[in-house]
Length: 238
Image (tube, rainbow, N blue to C red; front, side, top):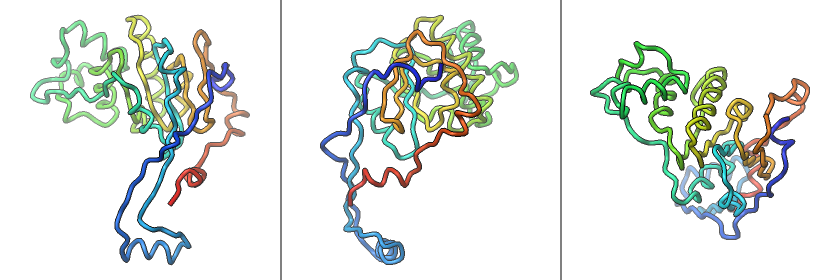
């Protein structure tokens, strides 16, 4: 089953109060108005989505928030009270493997996210490639009530899928819970096997608990469309 075939837990609703930004108008904003027929007074408003009560009260191991860039995903993340972000830093004066509590924990977590190169384990964080660094950061921050924003955004899609496969097994085998992964991508979902999927594009929350998510068929992937940034302009009032 695909995630969007799961039971709809609830629909997303926008907040009544907008986020407002104000900037001075100048020759540059005037150029935008004149050349692109766009009226702008210096004030922009965006109505973000509320975090549904059904999610606040839900029991889950893994929750995924997905949707197009600029749709309000990161704004929704701010509503997760009591959660921390995956920003625990490495001490680059030491090897990445030396940044964990014990050698056993280091081996288990680094292997869980697919970082299995012993030479890489023995290097400092600041010399790793983007893909190696992503997995190293993921391993160091594996904990309950943690938010991972821009999840898999910087890495190859095959690497993303293989990382998620090991990651979800680690999370469930070790009883971690309330972990939130936010991304503009959706291809990793069958590999991460989230319990709940918040699809900003569909404006739906899907309850996938107890469901074995499968990859979409080629025909459905071809037919499926994704909202572009322009479709969100209707939610932005100047």
